[in-house]
Each structure stands twice: as structure tokens, then as C-alpha cells.
Image 1 (cartoon, one colour):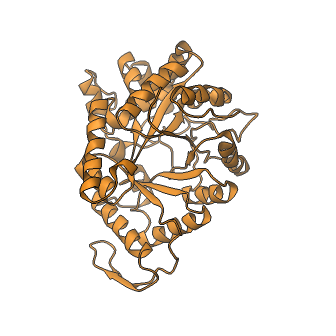
Image 2 (image 1 turned 60 degrees about the vertical axis):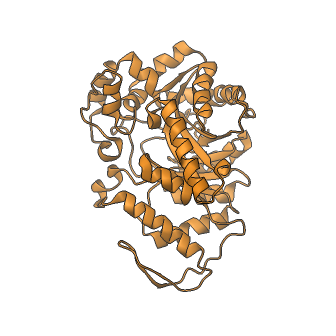
Image 3 (image 1 turned 180 degrees about the vertical axis):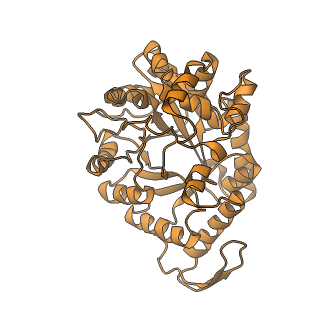
Length: 390
């Protein structure tokens, strides 16, 4: 179906029990995934108590590509992946550079690059308020801090162990020595996360590309997506970077089943429904309005407002019953393998060249996770990729 070279990856297990999470990492590699995505979170995106571990009870280490309420540390899980696997690329997506100092992150990131023998990529965003305020952190000037942090990482990584000094509004360096040598193939790759002209510029000039979630990250508008990708390539070319080497990664929110009818029933479950309410776009309420509806949360912005204390589980059930069919259809990639592949192909046609699958069907019914490998393999094959092994 696809004439472009596309990489396919799986969302990693980061929930208890730890022994099962660790076993899932080499299993993902053995199945043939090209990369594994291990995000940085502390608490859930869903109201407390809604999510259970999205794995069958009889197979807790199955890589079923979703998350639960509890999150193990992302850097630590990447370290585990680095030593328990050999070839699979490791993506930490998404992490913010605001709650850890740039020097500490630079050390950890280069350490992981050495541990993995050059397989690390970090997707960098400006953070979500739920990671800050509940824990006493302050999220101020997030995009300015993000840009400054990336510059500091590069300064330290490229210093060759010599003392470096650098002016900064946030983290000035004074005779700072970074003695870890550069990994032989270079530093970890960086994908920028978000929207707007600043992120578009950074993705093309200091990054290796861009990461978003779809359909919501584009509001289901693939003409906009194609234009935004073209803009990043233009920035890359002006900066002397190769636009054709850029990476455009999409975390795709799928509700995949054996047929469209079953998938639609799962898509109307409260767990996928919560994503349709909060994540139709970053400014989800505005996207609902564009589609002609009023979001039940009122004026809602994901980065500023998402929080597991936002509603009770019972209240979410009430809200989900009122989601218009059109919103469910636009906000979630639902269906049997052929329908899901058709939706993902639209993203590839717009310029996406890496797909990280989210398995929302397993969030609705954990036992349904046992079907994931077979069903997602059909999707990958329809998109021109190699089959995922059982």
C-alpha cells in the first residue's frame, strides 16, 4: 500500500510487575518491531482507577502497546532495553527538559547512548502541567527553556571534555566539564514535539525531526500536516541539514479489532472515549467546536489541563455516552485491519515515516490484548512493512 520506507514501532510496557515489564522488551525485539517507545510520565492521563494493565492475565509480559495507571521511570526502562536487546531502536517519547537540569539530562542521555551502542532517540516536549504543579514544580517559559536545554546538551556533548562556559537566562555554564566521550556514531537523535512555528524551526535546525500523536496532533487535518512537514524540511534545508533524512514520527491512537463492528464497540468504551474528549487535538475543545460540537469539559487544553483528578470514573462514563459519533470517528483510528491501514496510509501520504502504535482496544478490555500481535501484523503488512511475529 505504501511506496515510502516507513518504520513501525510498539509502545513499551512500563507498568508493574517489573519482571514482566523487563521480559516484554526482548519480546518486542523478537517480534520484529523496529523501535520501542518508552515515554516519561509520573501519573496517568486517565482519571484515577480507570486503567488497568492492558495485558492478558495469563501473559503479563505481552507487548500489547499501551499503558496503565502506574509508570516505571522512563530513563531506567530505556537502560533496561539497552542491555536486554541488541538491535531494536529505543525511543523515549515524550520527555520534557524542564524538570531535570540540562547537565543531568545530558549525562543520562549520553550514558544511554553508550549503553545501547547508539540506538537512542529522545522526543522533547515542553511538558504537561500534570507533571509539574502536583509535585511542586513550576512550568514557566517552557518553550524558551526547552530550546535552551537542547543548546546546553549540544554544548556539553561536543565539548570534548574541555571546560566550557555559556551565558543563559536559565542554566549558565561556568567552566563546566563534561568528560563522557561522544559515542562513536554521534549523540542521541532528537525529535521535537508540539506545534507552532518555534517547534517547526527547531525540528529542522537543531533536531533530527518531529514527533506528534495522530489523529489528534493534526486535528484529523492531513493537508495541514503535510504543510507543517514541508515547513520543517524548508528550515532544515536553510540550516544546511538534509531534509530527506528527517524523521517524522506519529504515535497513532488505534482501536484495532478483527472487524469494524467490534472495533466501534471498543471505541465507544470510556477509556478510548476519554481520549476523544481530551485529545481530539491539543486544544481539544476548539477542535470539537470546529466539528460543530461542544466539548463536555468546556475550554480544555491538554498540556495545561489534563489531570487524573479532572473527573471521577463515573462522571467519565456519563460524558462518553454523549460523544457524537463524528468525534469518535475523527479522534480515534478505529476499525479492522484494512480500515486502520487506510487511515494510517493518509498519515504516511502526508509525510509521516515512523508509526508508533497505541493499542486502545487493550485499554478498553485487557484480555483483548492477546489479539494485538496478529491484528497489528495485518496492518503493518498492508502498509508495506514486514509482518510482526507471534
